[in-house]
Image (cartoon, rainbow, N blue to C red; front, side, top):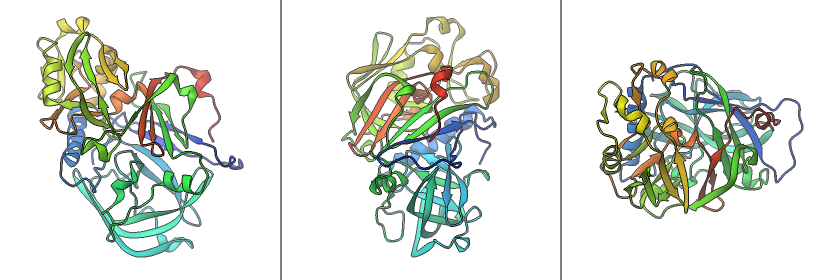
Length: 403
């Protein structure tokens, strides 16, 4: 797997010596972007491989984020082995490389007599299924997961994957085909968190570099200091295949005052980097920007220099509320273009084409959308929440204790 992009976020979980918080609470962890640039073309290819997995008739096998990912530190076993796992809301299974965790070294490991197998965009993972004690910070629970002796498509620094999507996605991954509970399911069922909810806050790079500690995940609730106003909740869409994931409906997308889509269905996904729209929506959008075209080197759209000052806000009508992306938010900052393989002085757009599928998956709102909005993934009420995110420059809001 190619080096991870500036967008990769590392979730570092620390327990220290503090006592666990009382039951019916939530807890938080910070996110960091490790340094390692990648070309824009590779970002698009990675996102399209992920889309290719969504665009199949079998949605019981999750699409796995290959390069651009969150990673979260999870403790496994007794004594504890800390492993770095991809944090993915587009899948719902946990598996770890056998090189990172050995069940023979844990006195609480239990082999279930099952195997698991997961296919994803450019590789796979397979092995044996176990249960063991797992931990996130000071919180412990029993977790079922796979130990993979055969895997491909992952960076050597990534030791596995933990999914936080709807738990129905976990079926048919193991040899018995049963549903496997996610860590949040287990925390909720053991009354260690009050809601089966994840709140996600992460930010764009602000200094032109390729590393910043600028994000947070809240388990069991959401952090009201990380967004403005109220959270707008929308139910999971009924349109398939988006309904299998954190899928929602968008009533309208507009460029300035010009409508470019009517109601469409798609997903909100932390594991996708770009903002991807159906080919029809993409064409309709870029018809509003004379001369905009796909760049062969990056596979992203280029905005002609004369049109950059004329760019307008792009609005997304979700749940009767308008979410706005300014031109600065949907174009690649100039101080980052060279880092990701673009041509300095060229204006690239984070919005690209998903393909021709219009039925049930006409958009993916990935990281370049979510960097501007706080997102909530609520299994209890089968809904997704969005609110305008507080920026990382608000130092007082960042100074809250973790856990």
